[in-house]
Image (cartoon, rainbow, N blue to C red; front, side):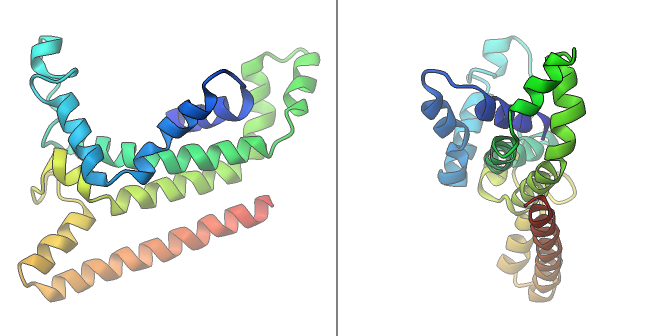
Length: 197
């Protein structure tokens, strides 16, 4: 959440050459097939990948662990958080920060004391949307974390496994959990966004 919000703030407040390319790159996982993102992560983390054992000289031990599930979820959720945070920061008048600076506040102090309180609801909505995207993540997680019950199996993978093995009752219960969680989360995010407007 923190790195994605920082990227959203940076994109909202700075103009630079190639900004449209950077903007497109950070939201790319949103439009790519999740299995393609998973394959890219797998290529990076494999023994001979850029972050693999052969390159680094040690094993960071991520693949097929819970850390891989977290990484896949974070990568897939980041575009939603970045875009929502960016829109939130773009909606805040930059003169607030400028006035705070004229009163002697540092850039960080102006951000923490004046901008973030105004952005809190939008960032809350971004966190909820990112969490829900993570909860539903399937393809990238399956590629780099596998589907190991009790270790790397997510809700989406558990529903798929139950359906594939003919355990329809379990799949129904898990589906109900996903639906209720999603409905509550989206309603809360809408409420936050509505109050901000």
